[in-house]
Amino acid sequence: MSGHILVVEDDEQISEILSYRLEIADYEVTVIDDGDDCWAYLEEADELPDAMLLDVMLPGTDGFGVLRRLQRTDRYDGMPVILITGRGLEDDVIQGFDLGADDYIVKPFSPSEVVARLNRLL
Amino acid sequence: MTSEPTDAEAAFQYELRRRLAVVHATAETMLEDPDGSLTVDQRESVETILAASNELSSLVAHDPETVEPALEPDADGDVAAPTPSVDDPDRSASIDLVLESGPFADVLVDQLEQSGYEPTVVSSVDDVRSSAEGADAARHVVLDWRAFPEPSIESLTALFDRLEAGTSIALLSVVDDESIPAPVLGVSGLLSPRASTEMVADVLASIHFDPDDEPRVVVATVDDDAAEGRSMAETLEAVGCAVDTVSVAELRSHADRDGIDCVFLSADGVDTIDDATLRSLRTPETSLPVPVVVVGPTPKADDWLPVCGSQRFVRRSVTAHGLAGEILLAIDPEAES
Image (cartoon, rainbow over all chains, first blue to last red; front, side):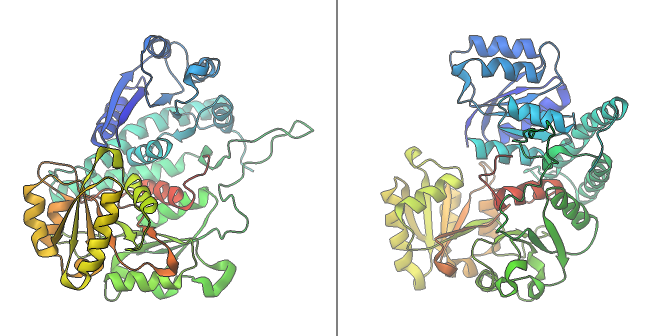
């Protein structure tokens, strides 16, 4: 499997582990640690990532805010988004799906499961 | 129904999950180390850390992974209680685990129960609930390879024969040091030699190969099934693969010499291939592990029987959480989770 994955996660240790595991699975990885920077990156990108792993609790615009912005623009319709978060509330899950997330993984997670879910979406 | 946590509880759970994520993911990644650089003692220590993080994870209540995405308020404005992900009332929710009892099985049972399934640990392959038990038949079977009195591809096929069509299997094994006791360990699945070009293309896609990339495939056979091997080689060429047909005896030197993407191994070849050759495919020195597809008769006219959880061919310790995720995907790969 190959492709470009955008990891939006403010915890450096988690993003490092995700990057390591995704690169082993032959994905190219870009890491961003801020919701506003994520949006700026997407707006300026000539070519969108193949999928995005998005933390909910982020500096700047939070993950739900990023999802809301994505929802308003047709350009992002084909880009799968998996929410990865430490928030364990059912309302958060429902809100995430309502805002267009394709999948939802709660911390602590299995890196292998993240890769399996990405493979399924791609 | 579980009550919502207070803000303080939610904040505590958030912080706990965040830190557990680092511990859990780091430990699992260390165990998956394809270089095998951990000593046996180090590996056991990391497994202890992982088991402890699994136990801590289970203490964090209210796991939302069991929530269906499309919960809508009813006419009164109430949101229905979360429903488990067992989405088809006509399908059994039973999962039989042929595993040794212990912490690993306990965590796996807990994870599957949280997703709405009904896992049962049984003591032997004979206890797996087959189609004879009708509605109680297992929808999925988690099987420790060592549960077979005489492990072989025939034993596995005999179990497939007993199961209801559509029942999937996750096959586990334990590798002690450098020995590999299971001939099917690391096999992606069984493919009928009569499989159509479309089916073969789908199989290649399922193990992450795009025929447009002209994957380099080796078909390895023994004398008795060379004709079936030639037939499969023609099908693979028809879907765009670069194919070499070799004997199983030649496979080791062939694999060493040339970069190959995938091996299609005849059913008789599974029983004759030596461990060193299998090891060279699972843990090559300079490339990613090479998937192995067994070409042989498949029961119940199924063309392709994937073996869940074997997409990676290196020695690794599977975690109960990781395995639970793979099982749920195997049971319902199209589910909108």
